[in-house]
Amino acid sequence: MHPLLRQHQLGFFTSSRSAYPAMDDGPMQAAVVDHAQLQTQVEQFRHQHHLPGVGVVLVQNDTILSACSGQRRIDAPAFIQNSDSFPLGALSKAVTATLVARWVEQGKLRWDSTLADLLPAWRDQMRTEFQSVTVLQLLQHRAGLARGFGDLKYSNLLAMLGGNPSANRSTAARWILQQAYIGEVNQRTHYSNIGYFIVAIIIELLGSNTYENILQQQLFSELSLHPHLSNTSSVQGHQSLKTNWFSKPRWHKVNKEERQDLARLNPTVRLSQSEYGIFLREHLRGLRGQSTLLSPASFQQLHTPIDHYALGWSIIRSAEFGPLSVHDSTEDGYTHYTLLMPSQNRAIAILCNAESACSDAKLVKFAESLLTSSMIKIE
Image 1 (cartoon, rainbow, N blue to C red):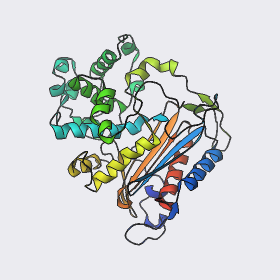
Image 2 (image 1 turned 180 degrees about the vertical axis):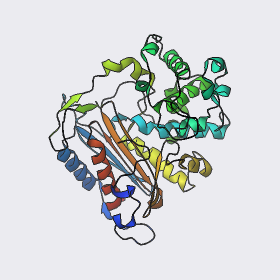
Image 3 (image 1 turned 30 degrees about the vertical axis):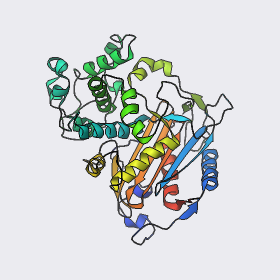
Image 4 (image 1 turned 135 degrees about the vertical axis):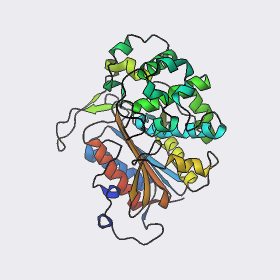
């Protein structure tokens, strides 16, 4: 599923009130669920759809509940644990945007800082169209950049890469800004992983450190998170050989060797479902004006859209529940989905080590059913 401008008829995503049960104003009534009940539902969901492994985190009124089911990898007996980390994929865009917001508040960046200002040594080699692109436009997918490396003729780039990861990222960013643009700057939203890659490189160059180290020191440590940010994960991604929706999938491990050099360019953010729940909880707190991580205005900025996309979040307006902040990710053998419901002070994320044409829609349905039918039991 494309995370941008998605308008489908699953639960929250329809604009018709008739798609929802009638509800009174105020917090919706829901069944109370404890850890055992959530664990049972996660187990049933995984078995029903024949998935290798699933992790779920549910946030309600500052309480975080998580459950997981299945194997870390299909060729080993080890089961997924709540402490196991998943690569967040596209869900890390909200993480990057949150870090940028902290830098803006600290005066290290401005939302309207341009690439020419931030990368003066590259200005003469940069395409003219990109020189005036701002940090905000990069995060809003309005910089005219390609979606990913696969949309560019990257064979020339591969020949330029060496053995230094940081130098390779810098080389790739400089090369990207010399390539043709996809659309007019700031004229329309064009979903771009490349834009967030450029932001990560700006952070590295200004911070004189790796993106991963800066993220840990200046964001995760503030949330008391100490995740594994290495290039390995105990939870293996899988892709499906399934040919249709109803057949039982046959999973195989992702062969990253085929695109290893390109994969190494992208910073990888990994969190367990519980750690990611802490991040989601902080955004819920921030939208209520109760976070010390950022000002209320900055949290509002992160969740204020243009063409449905804000900063690391796609924003859907529900007639029943108000603005919803959502995002999904399907890449490298993983499928994830996250949804914030600020009006009800709830959030959910489902992290799955399986990728197929069908798994994304199933995660959306499962997330929506959990979020609208469950309320965490506080022991």
